[in-house]
Amino acid sequence: MVLKNCTLLSLAPGLVEKADLRIENGFITERKKRILPKRGEEVVSFEGKFVLPGFVNAHTHLYSSLARGMGAPKKSAKNFLEILQYVWWKLDRALDDESIYYSALVGAIEAVQCGTTTLVDHHASPKAIPGSLDLIKLAMEEVGLRGVLCYEVTDRGGKKERNAGLEENERFILENKNNGMYRGMVGGHASFTLGNESLRLLGEMAERNSTGVHIHVAEDRCDVVDAVENYRCSVLERLEQAQGAVVRSEKLALAGLFAARVAHDVRNPLSSLKLQAQLIHAHAAPGSDERSMAEAMLLDIDQVEFVVTNLLDLAREVRLQRTPAAINALIEGVLRQVAPQCAHRHIAVSRHLAPDLPLVPLDPDRMTQALRNVIVNAVEALRERGTLAVWSHLSADGREVIVDVDDDGVGLDPEAARRAFDPFVSTKPDGVGLGLVNARSVVEGHGGTITLEPRRPAGTRATIRIPLEIGNTNG
Image (cartoon, rainbow, N blue to C red):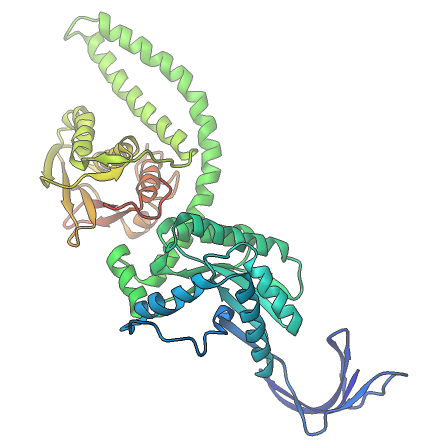
């Protein structure tokens, strides 16, 4: 087909040009001032008509195409969140395969009528997730549009629906990775309906499929308030943290392979050394040099065992066995464990543990290990006769238990603080750089956070926040 006497328009770069166009198999194959038609080729006059590149709608919801004329909700919405609750979240739950297809078909036809030839669609149909993106693709194919499609993953329907959304995204991405007309992206609803684990899963999927994440960002104040109140950061900072978690997870995977081999090679001879030191200690006279040497050996072996345990944990995925537990009891247990080390270095220990804290749903063994890693890190940062202070209290909103571990040691410079949670990074000459890495893994596995900040005039504060309600974690 040849289109004669077209007025060609382009917005970027700006262009107005008179020319003919040849169309073959749906593509423009030739453009020049005057094209001579081939024998039998169809010729259409475009005199007085404009031809311009199709528009791209970079964010749309085709599932809402049939919402016009829908009855008003029984209760009037007072804000954006209530609009979602009373209107859109009711609509998307009512969608079935037929309504998904026809909504997409109507929306695609209207797009073409407006000069839009590519749609980046953000879909949701919680009661009809599997295959929903294929239905949208089918409708768009009938109209002749290009599309980038995703399913908006959310936690509002629980893990089963979340996982189904993740699976639909990845299936569509993989099945269309070589499709010239359609591609998939990773979809997420918004920060305020996604927990930390879900954001991490979205990021990991995008990373392994070399694609982007399509997500609403600060569409309303409720998204901003949720990030500030529940995660103590902005929406963008939270998304950046999720991206950082993906990078950390890649580093940990590589480090874990190395760590598991080293730990395996060290553990067996270490057990033999410990047994021999225990025998020497048991047979040596109280107060003798032999007994003192054996005690020193056992302390050093305990430290090596601690490092080996951290190495093995680095190679394992955090799997939590939750039970209601008293955080103060865990703290006291760790402080008893480190008491000999503190006494040896003349370190003063002060406790400021709030009484009557509610029980926390956590894995006592894993959280004890995380607390020990943080407290040992603080002890090792202290000089002789330093002070270690441990605090526990309830957050102002009553949603979290907070543990602060303070030391008055040398402190951290900004660069060291930034890299403190990277594997095998340590500011101590003999440090391995795994304690804080594993502590963070455990705390984040509980849906919590761990941060480091400098204290004045000297030292560092480590703050652990653990939610009292089980959120979207992997425990």
